[in-house]
Amino acid sequence: MDFALTEEQEAIQDMAQRFAADELAPHTAQWDEKHHFPVDVIKKTAELGLAGIYTRDDVGGSGLGRLDAALIFEALSAGCTSTAAFISIHNMCSWMIDRFGSEELRQKYCPQLTSMEMIASYCLTEPGSGSDAAALKTKAVKDGDHYVLNGSKAFISGAGTSDLYVVMVRTGGDGPKGISTVLVENGTPGLSFGAQERKMGWNSQPTAIVNFEDCRIPVSNLVGEEGDGFKFAMMGLDGGRLNIAACSLGTANAALKTALDYANERQAFGKRLNQQQALQFKLADMGTELEAARVMLYQAAWKLDNKTPDATRHCAMAKRFVTDTGFKVVNDALQIHGGYGYLKDYPLERMLRDVRVHQILEGANEIMRVIIARDMLKEYQA
Image 1: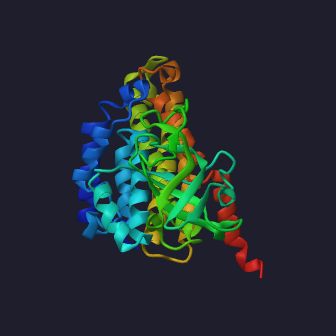
Image 2 (image 1 turned 120 degrees about the vertical axis):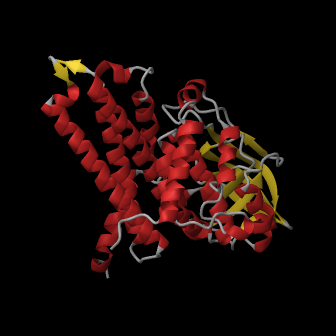
């Protein structure tokens, strides 16, 4: 059992940390305030190989693993949680086409995605199906050499700006086996977008409903085979859950550092805050909980890289534990700042708003408990 990072992983981590410090952190407060989607900065990540982290190298990807990705998103989120999360979504789309798409689709889209000539959004959730994703109703009906799409997707990051949409649609009967995956380019007739959602956080990326009204796409835009879409979605979410957990971890670590700096400067009752034993204990607990979260995340990523039979369970465990821990640590860091933590002059209130949604998306943490319990109990259900 070796807990040390390789030299390559340390270099990857350092590169992502430098990008976060130079390109994200100086602007994140303004992006949040102005609701600005920094596409120009996001596209710079392609130059570093971060637009196709675990996409194969023959189409411009970096061919890295899930542990490498966890290191990257932990580092990026310390600069801007919301922007790091969008880069994760783009990577999931690149990976899904590379992993399951035909060679024609791979060669058509992956080089443009790994270079970020195109940016991509992932469309699974609908107004009437969130946690119950297999109940989705957006239909794709075959008409000659085209599919005709009708329906809507909700809470779609990048909606209206992204160039390509990876969409889960119903091509068959009810349930997961009737779901397929198709690609829809922006500008396709019948594709439209709702108004931008007014959100608590994640303000540096747009979020809106995606509508399909007699939207015609070529049958060749089917990813894999009909009926395989739900399987693709669930496999994609294993990695997505690790990435969003990494975003919580990186943000919480930045919040802890901010709290440590503040506690060293702020005076109360005649001495610095970091000399008050109650706050020392709180800081110790925050550091301990984050270290436990980091070990759990890295272990789950290792299991996914090595395709262990319990990888899905551990991805769900990591997502549940790390996002809950991350939110608690950010909230504790805000509390240490007292009234100042509640002000926009300090980063804590933005961090809190941004990490809160991590307990909901990529599968709500209640659903993570369902996945974990179901796997734990399956041997008793024969």
